[in-house]
Length: 382
Ligand SMILES: Cc1cc2nc3c(=O)[nH]c(=O)nc-3n(C[C@H](O)[C@H](O)[C@H](O)COP(=O)(O)OP(=O)(O)OC[C@H]3O[C@@H](n4cnc5c(N)ncnc54)[C@H](O)[C@@H]3O)c2cc1C
Figure 1 (cartoon, rainbow, N blue to C red):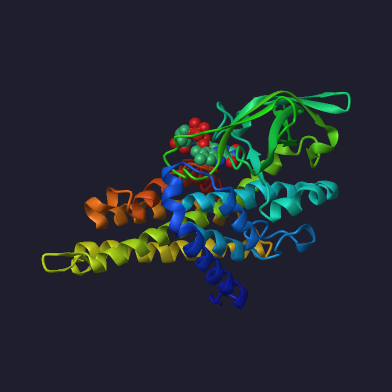
Figure 2: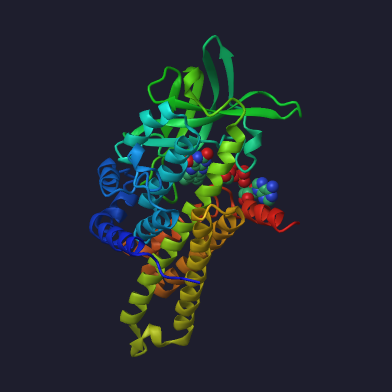
């Protein structure tokens, strides 16, 4: 077995870490406090190649492997969850479906601008009455001449209501299958299409500097050529997108855990009580030891899942395990980190407070922890 990263993967870690420390760290707390999505920062992330990382260079991407992409998300999340969310959702939910299921014309049209970070694309699956049960969605599309007419709504859609938002992939019911179950199809809907409204969602507990939107479709007319793949492929496309998305959320958990641990270790060495650094108290040292252990396990599990993906082998079970484990590890590590900071850990001047809040979404978005356990149970034959 070879646990060494390649020269290129190590270089990506070094460069992304340098960028995150220089460009994100100084403003992350303020963007969080003021609930500001920064188009400027997003475009800077685009300039250093953080969008379209696994997309072929022919469409403006970086043509890298999945481990490289995951390392980049991890390094951004080590500094800030909101910016990592913009990158993770941009790559796996925005660009992913277009790259894997789009036709040549769609790829040529959309990917170059999305891969440069000049524009963002959303992934519209969740609805007010259909979250974990994505099959329960109600948005419909009916064919009328050469156009589809879309009606319904979506909620909690990342990157879908900011100045860079260009459009969204929307899953809608287009008929009934022979089994009696709904037939789903995905549509590419651009902002500015009459009847399509995207409303930013504010007052979030976490990821406060990322864009989250409610979407409304009121007789939105979509040309036939804006179908993604074929009629009826929608549900399958969405599930495949979520399999890959789980790796991105896992990377956010791993990076966030590392960031909270780094802060806790530094603080524990500097803070003195009873005449010695608190890191010398076994109760504190053991929290740090447990954190280091779990981060190591999380990294190995996630990189193995990415390695399977890069080798084009089945990776779905490991992706669900990595998503579940990394997000819960970040919960335990961020909790220890706040505890180690004592009262200061509850103050906004210290980053651990933000890590503690940002973590919670990881156990909910792109399949809750309960749903991951259902997925894993099925893979192991329960
Ligand atoms: C900030 C943010 C960004 C998001 N970005 C996107 C996005 O870009 N695109 C998108 O489509 N969605 C997005 N989502 C939606 C997210 O994926 C859903 O919130 C998530 O899938 C859970 O759905 P729900 O909130 O409706 O909860 P529900 O499905 O109502 O779940 C509520 C609770 O019930 C539990 N539960 C449900 N079913 C079962 C079951 N069968 N067994 C055991 N427990 C169960 C859940 O685990 C959970 O604890 C985002 C959400 C947030 C908050």
